[in-house]
Length: 187
Image 1 (spheres, rainbow, N blue to C red):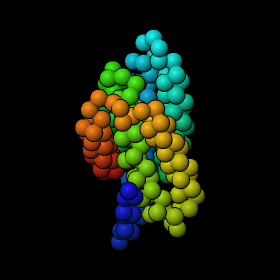
Image 2: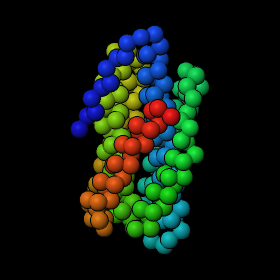
Image 3: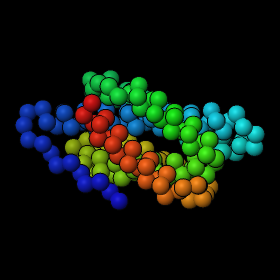
Image 4: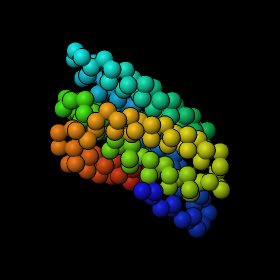
């Protein structure tokens, strides 16, 4: 399920404005992802018998932190401001992570699966859009997308679909992610 690429906008500064949206939203997404994993680790790391998933979450968080650091650099280099929603996304991400972890390992994995499904489609659309205009950035996004897909695949292997209320939980998380993407592009 690939998002349709955004057609080029006409007018002076349109491409720069679109690039700002892309970088702003990707930075916001990686910021939220780091916080989701931190929230999950805060809950599951404090409980006995969750050493394996806590290790998995730490590895995924580290990858997301690398992505975030790269977008921090890109925002600075290209003089793009981050979303004004960053403090809210930071809090919402941590709450989503902690909340799903309180529901158990399977729900934490269901959260990862839902988020990464949306992010994969989002990155795929951006990669298509940027392939000719900025092939270097498109290649970086491809690498990030592949790592996000690995997170999703791990979550599926670990039984995400066995989470309580799996279908509803996934639908709510995917809807929230899509809304956050739209808001972060503009704000």
